Image: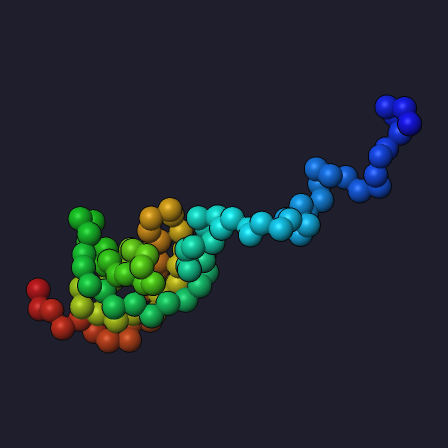
Length: 101
């Protein structure tokens, strides 16, 4: 067999090697984040950041909710997901804030 002939019919660098492997697959960090852009979440606003946006924690991920007041419960849509936090916008206020300003 000379160097111009193929040894096999499938391309080893473009095929799914994990399918043939005996080792478990490695999880990527983005697989650990339960939030996706466009997903809807019901959040309790527990804090406020320096810009005045509401801050909540959803499944271990910090979520910054624009135009949400401290102590309110909101339904929000995720608009941006970062490595350590997510940004959301308010769709509906389910419970008003109990904090008087």
